[in-house]
Length: 259
Image (cartoon, rainbow, N blue to C red; front, side, top):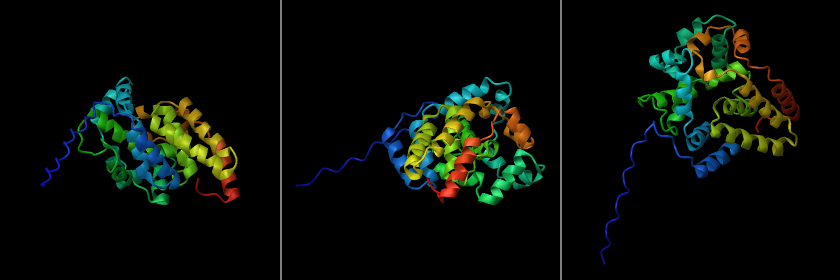
Protein backbone atom coordinates (compact mmCIF):
# COMPACT_ATOMS: atom_id res chain seq x y z
CA UNK A 1 0.00 0.00 0.00
CA UNK A 2 1.38 3.33 -0.98
CA UNK A 3 1.78 5.79 1.87
CA UNK A 4 0.54 9.30 1.45
CA UNK A 5 3.37 11.86 1.26
CA UNK A 6 4.23 13.49 4.55
CA UNK A 7 3.16 17.11 4.36
CA UNK A 8 5.81 19.74 4.85
CA UNK A 9 5.57 21.68 8.09
CA UNK A 10 3.88 25.03 7.67
CA UNK A 11 6.22 27.92 7.08
CA UNK A 12 6.75 30.00 10.18
CA UNK A 13 5.70 33.59 10.00
CA UNK A 14 8.62 36.00 10.31
CA UNK A 15 9.16 37.25 13.82
CA UNK A 16 7.80 40.71 14.43
CA UNK A 17 10.00 42.84 16.73
CA UNK A 18 6.93 44.90 17.60
CA UNK A 19 5.22 41.95 19.30
CA UNK A 20 6.53 40.74 22.69
CA UNK A 21 7.98 37.24 22.61
CA UNK A 22 6.05 34.60 24.52
CA UNK A 23 7.87 33.18 27.52
CA UNK A 24 9.24 29.68 26.96
CA UNK A 25 10.06 28.11 30.31
CA UNK A 26 11.09 24.74 28.86
CA UNK A 27 13.79 26.37 26.75
CA UNK A 28 14.83 28.57 29.68
CA UNK A 29 15.33 25.63 32.06
CA UNK A 30 17.23 23.63 29.42
CA UNK A 31 19.50 26.59 28.69
CA UNK A 32 20.06 27.26 32.40
CA UNK A 33 21.02 23.62 32.95
CA UNK A 34 23.58 23.88 30.16
CA UNK A 35 24.86 27.24 31.42
CA UNK A 36 25.32 25.97 34.98
CA UNK A 37 27.24 22.99 33.61
CA UNK A 38 29.50 25.31 31.61
CA UNK A 39 29.53 28.93 32.75
CA UNK A 40 31.46 29.95 29.61
CA UNK A 41 28.67 28.83 27.25
CA UNK A 42 27.53 32.36 26.39
CA UNK A 43 25.04 31.17 23.77
CA UNK A 44 22.84 29.81 26.57
CA UNK A 45 22.55 33.31 28.04
CA UNK A 46 20.98 34.53 24.81
CA UNK A 47 18.66 31.50 24.75
CA UNK A 48 17.44 32.43 28.22
CA UNK A 49 17.04 36.08 27.27
CA UNK A 50 14.97 35.14 24.25
CA UNK A 51 12.89 32.68 26.26
CA UNK A 52 12.05 34.93 29.20
CA UNK A 53 12.67 38.62 28.55
CA UNK A 54 9.46 39.05 26.54
CA UNK A 55 8.90 42.82 26.10
CA UNK A 56 12.03 44.16 27.83
CA UNK A 57 13.44 45.86 24.72
CA UNK A 58 10.06 47.38 23.92
CA UNK A 59 9.71 48.81 27.43
CA UNK A 60 13.31 50.04 27.44
CA UNK A 61 12.84 51.80 24.11
CA UNK A 62 9.70 53.56 25.27
CA UNK A 63 11.46 54.63 28.45
CA UNK A 64 14.45 55.85 26.43
CA UNK A 65 12.20 58.14 24.40
CA UNK A 66 10.91 59.71 27.62
CA UNK A 67 14.41 60.79 28.73
CA UNK A 68 15.93 64.16 27.88
CA UNK A 69 18.40 62.85 25.30
CA UNK A 70 16.66 59.58 24.42
CA UNK A 71 14.90 60.90 21.35
CA UNK A 72 18.19 62.05 19.86
CA UNK A 73 19.86 58.71 20.62
CA UNK A 74 17.00 56.82 19.03
CA UNK A 75 17.01 59.13 16.00
CA UNK A 76 20.75 58.63 15.46
CA UNK A 77 20.39 54.84 15.93
CA UNK A 78 24.11 54.17 16.26
CA UNK A 79 25.09 50.50 16.23
CA UNK A 80 27.33 50.34 19.29
CA UNK A 81 28.92 47.01 18.33
CA UNK A 82 30.42 48.81 15.34
CA UNK A 83 31.41 51.87 17.35
CA UNK A 84 33.04 49.78 20.08
CA UNK A 85 34.96 47.88 17.38
CA UNK A 86 36.55 51.08 16.06
CA UNK A 87 39.98 50.54 17.59
CA UNK A 88 41.32 53.91 16.44
CA UNK A 89 38.55 55.63 18.37
CA UNK A 90 39.03 53.40 21.41
CA UNK A 91 42.78 54.09 21.37
CA UNK A 92 42.16 57.84 21.22
CA UNK A 93 40.32 57.93 24.56
CA UNK A 94 42.42 59.49 27.37
CA UNK A 95 43.87 57.54 30.31
CA UNK A 96 41.57 57.24 33.30
CA UNK A 97 38.39 57.32 31.23
CA UNK A 98 35.71 54.67 30.86
CA UNK A 99 37.02 54.09 27.33
CA UNK A 100 40.59 53.58 28.56
CA UNK A 101 39.33 50.97 31.03
CA UNK A 102 37.42 49.33 28.18
CA UNK A 103 40.59 49.32 26.08
CA UNK A 104 42.44 47.52 28.89
CA UNK A 105 39.49 45.13 29.18
CA UNK A 106 39.69 44.24 25.49
CA UNK A 107 43.43 43.70 25.65
CA UNK A 108 43.36 41.59 28.81
CA UNK A 109 40.39 39.36 27.94
CA UNK A 110 40.57 39.10 24.16
CA UNK A 111 36.84 39.83 24.05
CA UNK A 112 35.28 42.09 21.43
CA UNK A 113 31.95 43.75 20.78
CA UNK A 114 31.65 41.99 17.45
CA UNK A 115 32.45 38.66 19.07
CA UNK A 116 29.51 39.05 21.44
CA UNK A 117 27.31 40.10 18.52
CA UNK A 118 28.26 36.95 16.61
CA UNK A 119 27.28 34.72 19.55
CA UNK A 120 23.97 36.52 19.93
CA UNK A 121 23.03 36.03 16.29
CA UNK A 122 22.71 32.28 16.77
CA UNK A 123 20.01 32.70 19.41
CA UNK A 124 18.67 36.26 19.47
CA UNK A 125 15.46 36.73 17.55
CA UNK A 126 16.17 40.36 16.61
CA UNK A 127 19.90 40.62 17.16
CA UNK A 128 20.82 40.79 13.49
CA UNK A 129 22.00 44.20 12.38
CA UNK A 130 19.81 44.06 9.27
CA UNK A 131 16.55 43.91 11.28
CA UNK A 132 15.30 47.46 10.85
CA UNK A 133 13.00 48.10 13.75
CA UNK A 134 13.37 50.41 16.76
CA UNK A 135 12.86 47.58 19.25
CA UNK A 136 15.41 45.40 17.45
CA UNK A 137 17.92 48.26 17.59
CA UNK A 138 17.23 48.63 21.32
CA UNK A 139 17.85 44.92 21.83
CA UNK A 140 21.22 45.22 20.10
CA UNK A 141 22.04 48.29 22.18
CA UNK A 142 21.23 46.37 25.38
CA UNK A 143 23.54 43.59 24.24
CA UNK A 144 26.40 45.87 23.22
CA UNK A 145 26.61 47.85 26.48
CA UNK A 146 26.94 44.70 28.62
CA UNK A 147 30.74 44.84 28.72
CA UNK A 148 30.68 48.58 29.47
CA UNK A 149 28.56 47.74 32.50
CA UNK A 150 31.34 45.38 33.60
CA UNK A 151 33.67 48.38 33.52
CA UNK A 152 31.29 50.69 35.36
CA UNK A 153 30.32 48.22 38.11
CA UNK A 154 33.75 46.68 38.66
CA UNK A 155 32.40 43.15 38.12
CA UNK A 156 34.97 41.19 36.13
CA UNK A 157 33.77 39.59 32.90
CA UNK A 158 36.23 36.70 32.83
CA UNK A 159 34.97 35.05 36.02
CA UNK A 160 31.65 33.45 36.86
CA UNK A 161 31.20 35.49 40.04
CA UNK A 162 31.48 38.78 38.16
CA UNK A 163 28.95 37.67 35.58
CA UNK A 164 26.47 36.55 38.23
CA UNK A 165 26.73 39.87 40.03
CA UNK A 166 26.25 41.78 36.78
CA UNK A 167 23.19 39.76 35.75
CA UNK A 168 21.63 40.63 39.13
CA UNK A 169 22.52 44.29 38.52
CA UNK A 170 20.98 44.00 35.03
CA UNK A 171 17.79 42.47 36.42
CA UNK A 172 17.38 45.43 38.76
CA UNK A 173 17.95 47.85 35.87
CA UNK A 174 15.67 46.18 33.30
CA UNK A 175 13.30 43.86 35.18
CA UNK A 176 14.15 41.34 32.49
CA UNK A 177 13.15 37.95 33.90
CA UNK A 178 15.97 36.20 32.05
CA UNK A 179 18.58 38.12 34.04
CA UNK A 180 16.90 37.27 37.34
CA UNK A 181 16.57 33.61 36.34
CA UNK A 182 20.31 33.30 35.70
CA UNK A 183 21.19 35.13 38.93
CA UNK A 184 18.93 32.88 41.01
CA UNK A 185 20.13 29.66 39.37
CA UNK A 186 23.80 30.62 39.67
CA UNK A 187 23.37 31.77 43.25
CA UNK A 188 21.74 28.53 44.36
CA UNK A 189 24.42 26.48 42.64
CA UNK A 190 27.13 28.55 44.34
CA UNK A 191 25.85 27.47 47.77
CA UNK A 192 26.33 23.82 46.79
CA UNK A 193 29.73 24.54 45.26
CA UNK A 194 31.17 26.64 48.09
CA UNK A 195 29.21 25.55 51.15
CA UNK A 196 28.65 29.19 52.17
CA UNK A 197 26.55 32.23 51.28
CA UNK A 198 29.31 34.62 50.20
CA UNK A 199 28.46 34.46 46.48
CA UNK A 200 24.74 34.76 47.19
CA UNK A 201 25.41 37.89 49.24
CA UNK A 202 27.49 39.35 46.41
CA UNK A 203 24.70 38.64 43.93
CA UNK A 204 22.19 40.32 46.23
CA UNK A 205 24.53 43.31 46.47
CA UNK A 206 24.63 43.47 42.67
CA UNK A 207 20.85 43.66 42.59
CA UNK A 208 20.78 46.42 45.23
CA UNK A 209 23.43 48.41 43.35
CA UNK A 210 21.52 48.07 40.09
CA UNK A 211 18.36 49.30 41.76
CA UNK A 212 20.12 52.31 43.30
CA UNK A 213 22.05 53.32 40.16
CA UNK A 214 20.74 55.70 37.53
CA UNK A 215 19.10 54.05 34.52
CA UNK A 216 22.13 53.16 32.40
CA UNK A 217 20.19 52.44 29.21
CA UNK A 218 19.54 56.15 28.88
CA UNK A 219 23.22 57.10 28.66
CA UNK A 220 24.95 58.45 25.57
CA UNK A 221 27.71 55.85 25.46
CA UNK A 222 29.94 57.75 23.07
CA UNK A 223 30.11 60.60 25.58
CA UNK A 224 30.33 58.23 28.53
CA UNK A 225 33.41 56.53 27.09
CA UNK A 226 35.33 59.83 27.28
CA UNK A 227 34.29 60.51 30.87
CA UNK A 228 36.70 59.78 33.77
CA UNK A 229 35.73 56.39 35.19
CA UNK A 230 35.55 57.45 38.85
CA UNK A 231 33.48 60.52 37.96
CA UNK A 232 31.12 58.41 35.87
CA UNK A 233 30.57 55.99 38.73
CA UNK A 234 29.78 58.85 41.10
CA UNK A 235 27.44 60.55 38.62
CA UNK A 236 25.59 57.31 37.92
CA UNK A 237 25.44 56.38 41.62
CA UNK A 238 27.20 53.04 41.15
CA UNK A 239 28.39 51.89 44.55
CA UNK A 240 31.61 50.11 45.47
CA UNK A 241 31.07 46.30 45.28
CA UNK A 242 32.28 45.35 48.76
CA UNK A 243 30.47 42.01 49.07
CA UNK A 244 31.71 41.08 45.61
CA UNK A 245 35.34 41.59 46.60
CA UNK A 246 34.79 39.63 49.80
CA UNK A 247 33.36 36.73 47.79
CA UNK A 248 36.25 36.99 45.31
CA UNK A 249 38.77 36.67 48.13
CA UNK A 250 36.90 33.78 49.69
CA UNK A 251 36.75 31.89 46.40
CA UNK A 252 40.45 32.49 45.79
CA UNK A 253 41.36 31.24 49.27
CA UNK A 254 39.30 28.09 48.63
CA UNK A 255 40.87 27.54 45.18
CA UNK A 256 37.48 27.78 43.47
CA UNK A 257 37.55 29.36 40.02
CA UNK A 258 34.26 28.09 38.52
CA UNK A 259 30.81 28.20 40.08
